[in-house]
Length: 325
Image (tube, rainbow, N blue to C red; front, side, top):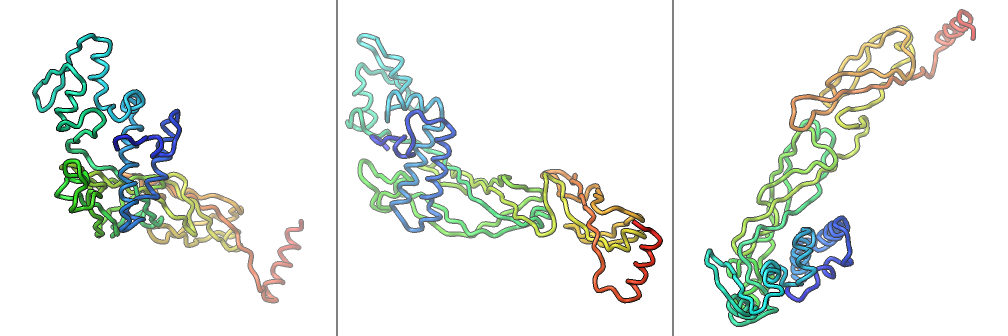
């Protein structure tokens, strides 16, 4: 990305905060990710530029050097060391050997085969970019844990150029300068019990490709737990309503209480008032990475009888005379 403006690539101002840079990166990464632009070489190249810009601007120390030295920021320490020295001698370490130079251009000439200052540095092995991808799970899956087969698109680096897109100073003819190819494949994902909104499941080595022989990045699945028709989740506790017939609320009895692990028989004491909340300890969601469980809170909702028979109405009339308002 020599001679490219990292700020312009991410579409942010030079005084952008770290949060603004992160937001811009995520927005652009989603737009240009190879998974949503299958076969689009322009988007693939754009995605690589976005990643490279983010790697520099998201690191405060690298960003400081970039703001001062531009695309030669990686040599900032050497520049600063010799600043203000007359007839300075430059020491540069490479491969365990220290070389000494009297002119900056000599350094770049040696490194880049006579290209001089302004040429792109030959990079060593680089770890691949970590990638985030959303995954939706039901409340039942979050409770029990599950396995999921996902279709993913992964990018394999070109063996001829090591993912750099160039051989020497020319575009790689094998990958047409893209640096690799997109390969669709299936991936089995383990959803652990207890996951909640925002939980991140790490798939080691399933992210972006490494460059020049570097290791692959990781894939992070960001969990979204879908809403449920019966239960409302609050942390690891579950909340629900339980319908109780009027006669049971007055005289007491048992009602069926649904849970995510089957139905339970809940005992209703006589004369239980409408709106009473029953707490069932340990019947909520599992704590992620633990054998402990949250609680369930069931709020009683009394249901009134309908389609009364003549005899039932007479009984309620008698009750009204016995218990006048």
